[in-house]
Image (tube, rainbow, N blue to C red; front, top):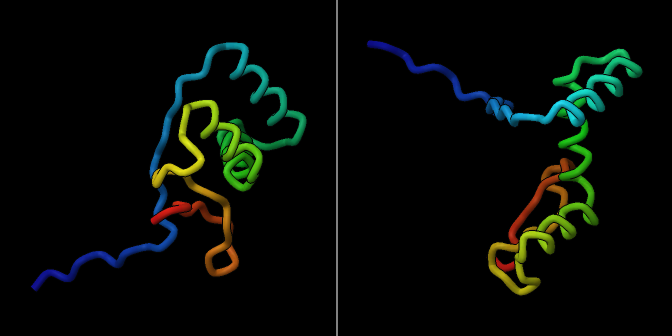
Length: 89
């Protein structure tokens, strides 16, 4: 009998955006000044954006997500951790 692997709650999913040279250089310089890797710096930036109510609203407005759309999301906390949830489930 084969036992399945345990599910990890902190399972990671790889996302690899292609960056133009100017954006990459900016992240590289910031990471270098902070003595961190480019990947860690990019992750920190993503986390900061997603935790920002202003940024989440701005990006949805930019892409035309209506304020009353069931797809609109807002920032909240779930179990003490920042999370995004749908406004109108």
